[in-house]
Image 1 (spheres, rainbow, N blue to C red):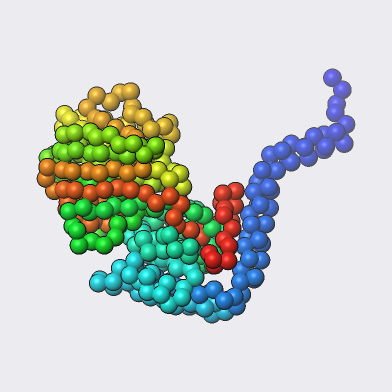
Image 2: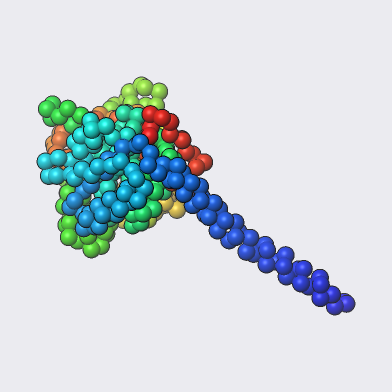
Length: 377
């Protein structure tokens, strides 16, 4: 076989090089164009008339550092803004309502999932946009939205850009507390039973050190706690109801987003489909049942499908979708919304407000963006 001419060899090497490195070049160029596009949007907003209200959780370790970053950023971009701190007797919802009363166009939650959900509770349904500057251990909703975590400057750019997306807001109504005047918002997952018991017993100091693993440490202490029993009425997607009577379970969850760090609890959950994903979870046989349940979650995560592992024998996950669910229990159980404990109840209702919240998102989600209009400034 004759030797390949040197020109042909060089040409072949160039082609191979191009095929190997083309994806990386395309990725770099795409990222550069996105950053340039965002910079143009921010330049357009320099000195605009939008009033930003930042709702800051001062209990977070980096709160003062973030406060300074917000002030410097708004000053350098000549933005009109105010910062309102949450307090023990004044949560994010009350602060956001105050901000809206003050004329804020965009309300930005600066904190963890708890701050985000309480601010969302007030902003949803108002035709105002909500931005997010994540601080904290979880930041699950921010991660689901693609909002930068641990990068305050990048998050500020997203919060003050025009890219927006409408998402659902879940609500929990505590029906045996008639003095409550609103439903408690959740953007990720709400639950009653074991999950809330685990969250309520988590050591805050341990959570700061080992993050999500702290929940598992608390959960071990309650593996053999008594089950809960009661009636659950589900509202299907078509609006019809059906009731499961006298069911026993470890926990009952309603999900808007089903993704948590490392695992998929509800693979079919979508945060803009106008429905909730429900899971009624039970185990038997002691540690064998809990091991089976863990296997179920791993199976869902790997397959991306809402189904149990075929190897499970002592665990059960009843999964369904619907518009609402009403729970009546024989004894009180703890309730959590996005990791915040609401206390104990025997009677509650989960529901969803379809696409009620406008959230500022990065340009990387431009395929599903809704560009904000004049009333969503």
